[in-house]
Image (cartoon, rainbow, N blue to C red; front, side):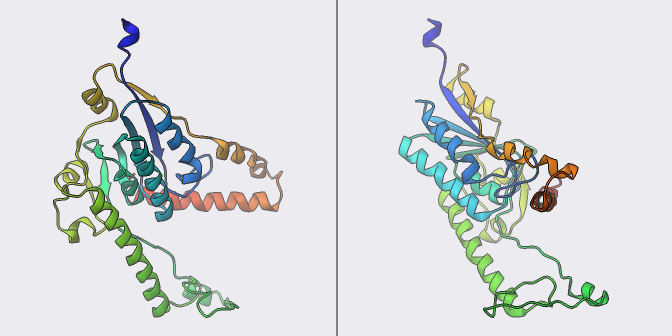
Length: 279
């Protein structure tokens, strides 16, 4: 009789990290790194559900959109329901991924929201002026040098950037409104201001559907015998990073040194994303 009481198998996808940004030994979330795992999750079980666990402060709006669409396309094609579970944070692009779920749950201490668009840089034109450095930029195309941090701000460049941000923000808002239709309870000016909330406040605003975790909720939905099966993610990116390790020891060429510098910059950017939410 035990063979007939093994319970429903629920594939579990874990999305942890910044979206579209990679740091040393930590691949970013992208359609390239996660597409295969998503396909596997929807093919591995005849059960009616797929669980997605999210711990992300956001990142690339394009990769957020691509991952969102892959999840929804497969859910519709396979007739499966997606349950999303937020861990430490599901903010900005992380929340974009969360609304792919038919139902969204979070821990009582999770941070949720930040439905907005941000672009950050530094103005270094006065610094190089004090150092006696002149900036020489040659372009073919009048706007090719727009937003150069070593040049004074140009109001036209700022206006153009803000127009792009509004366009991306409008897309984000449209996705949230479509996926949370009939459940959002706050005014648009509050919900889409870029603010973020603890899970209990997000629940009151209709951004999530409850306070729970993946094991507890899946037992409620499918019974005590439910089996959670984590879907592995391809690690080819990781092995590629290990091959670069000689450059840390001074054994690699110039290209490997540049790759290391790029990794360090990415790590700082990712750290800044997490720190916005006190993590």
